[in-house]
Image (cartoon, rainbow, N blue to C red):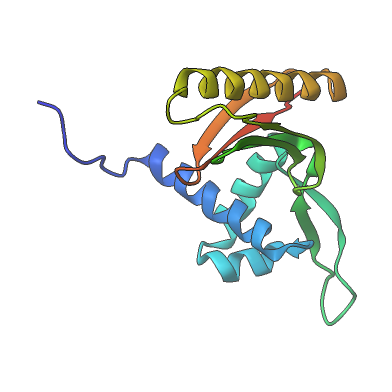
Length: 171
């Protein structure tokens, strides 16, 4: 019998906690101390340290200096590693298809827009999907031109109009 709900095993909890820690670093939008990540996430210090180490190994975050000296030992800061991967975003609009390739800090590396030129997207869905696939392939090719590392693909759908691919450039 197929289960209706996924239960929380150890792997699921770790994946969830990795997401929480990565979101804390992302939302800081600047270098952040491990202590601040502990405060924001509600996770314990050891767990945050372990998860940040894993995210560093995957090149999603990097150490980026130390905090200003105050009382006690200066804190090591972590930040999103812009070169740790690439993000491809595509939007299929009413009259056009737009695609953008960014680094992990959302700096645009490459973009392209294809106008419908009178083609009805509703009546020509196959054409739209072929164009979208072609643009995604072109964006991946741009990634390979920029970085010749090995890569893998993660994907997520942000809404009905927007999808993104994260290309991890692990060495």
